[in-house]
Image (cartoon, rainbow, N blue to C red; front, side):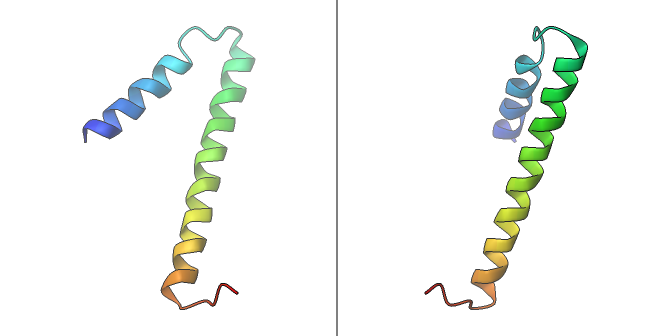
Length: 56
């Protein structure tokens, strides 16, 4: 739980004084897109490992 709160604090601090609203929203959307993409890649890798995919 401590790690999740730390990540939340880092996320909030990153966007506190970033400037223009458009830039701020762009970086927020981009960070969520990167996070979701990472989760999808992690899921695909774990699925391949769990089903016995041969990594040759």
